[in-house]
Amino acid sequence: MRFVKLSLAILLLVAFAAIKSPVSAQGGKGLTIGFSQVGSESAWRTAFTNATKAEAEARGINLLFSDGQQKQENQIAALRSFIAQGVDAIILAPVVETGWDEVLQEAKDNEIPVVIVDRNVSADPSLYVTRVSSDFVHEGRLAAAWLVQATAGKCNIVELQGTVGSSAALDRQKGFNEVIALFSEMKIVLSQSGDFTRTGGKEVMESFLKSMDPKEICAVWAHNDDMLIGAIQAMKEAGIDPGQDIKTISVDAIPDIFKAMMDGDANATVELSPNMGGPAFDAVVAYLAGETLPKWIPVAGGIYFPDTAAEEYAKRSK
Ligand code: AHR
Image 1 (spheres, helix red, strand yellow):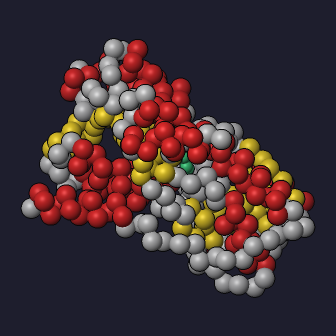
Image 2: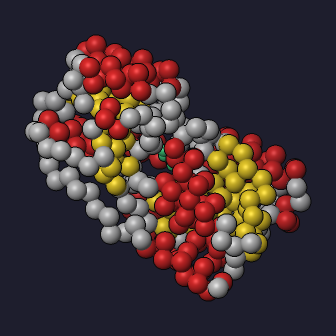
């Protein structure tokens, strides 16, 4: 039975690899597109912003960029400003899942198509064209499947959650918990939000290390690499050897996590591609050309370990 469960968990590691984007259109030259970004809370977010701006420039798209500073009210104000300016389309990377219906309805009433990128919204799908994103539930499952096999199915886990109410945090948690629920000795012993930031991860890990005997902690599961990097610092300051005394698993695959792997401080990361701008622009172009799009355009990612860290760091830190 244990073997069956483990095989099931490992199968999840490969299940997502075959998914490909169904959108093939290119271009967008001359379009004005408003892009409401969550903020700049993590290195992944900054990479996503930079890649989207570069993609717009290469295509000759006039991109109106707004940094929401992790506040939904700022993002709603940005959307209303894009609508007032009569943009050709809006790209929204929403900070949280709920509370978008009204402003999305306003965009629809003004015949401005909206493409959701990265995190999800709970709004009626008729209010937006499509969503370009990874499968966060799958990311959580992948992280858990790796941890199960790395600890032979026995581990006390501390969890650093992402931003409260964000689909990235909710769905990663869901996927992870689904898999560990299959193993009676895999347990989340402490869990708190570090808001996807390095300082948040460090502070929460410090409090975890004070609230229980660190020798009882087998692994840190962080919803992103930045929080884990903060937690690594906290462990080192407490005389703990991260990656050895306490195993680590996180999400994003940013250059600094590969550096941490090279230093022996991190064990594994699940990749979240920052290259969602291209497929989002493709979706806008296809929609404006009259194509009907699926409601979800998936972006795939892999899982990485120390054996390829030097190579990945060299590629990604350019
Ligand atoms: O929504 C994706 C998450 O947001 C990334 O994993 C995290 O780094 C970012 O803040």
